Length: 340
Image (cartoon, rainbow, N blue to C red; front, side, top):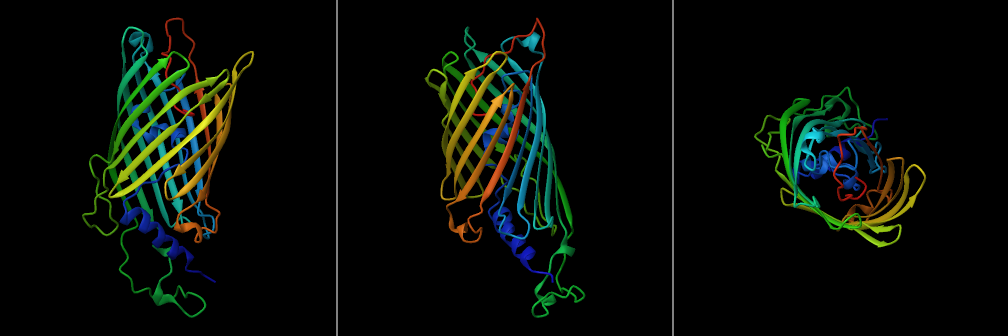
């Protein structure tokens, strides 16, 4: 028997992403730096960074909605720049919903430059830019329609009597961002803040050849790195997203416990977040030998609690920071953005 849950899911997703114009998002936004702000390209403790994140949500539906991303970024010309930073990177972002009915794939290349300020090089001001390609697709053949309703099942041999649009669309996209970070007390207390602008070219997106443009997404984020006592750090963070009259606000903090080992530092952390009027988020993770693993779980607090049967969403993220040994290169000491 073919159920109409796929069509219901598509309508639900359409109300979120088409009518309100909201992009995909992660609860662990700090674990996907290149999708948060292009200016975060190259901003890590080491020479390069490899990151990945997977999100699974709305598991009460036939097929859960999945979002995933992978990225790589690296500092270049460090022996020449000394205290400044020039970084380049690439990021892939994709999502799937409704048995693969609705899909999106996005590939972006990014670059950033950060200028150190002051003789002690404790403050940095940077700019970043991204450009890339997005493809979206809908498999109309996997959907069922009202005219195919045969009582307790849907008869696919019946005509659907619908005006079917094209199955794919693609467009070029441009993002940009700014970032400030600085130490208040060297290696102990620091702050950072950034803004980014996605879809600056307002690309056209419509399966029906209509002049429907993707609205600009405005992002503002800020946080701090605070040493409470020996081995213990507090990392409060805030994020605001605004797109096409839709506002998302994230507030939260994590506590990190650092233990110095012989060859590396072991870090364990736990955090709580609130995506206002949407979900309460818990997160936890560990880091060792520059590999950071983290997990987050959303507890829905909005009106979707009943529809999602309280199953909500979970995320898994991994970040590896690597070093390139060279006598001529010394990497600037940056404020550790939470789990970046």
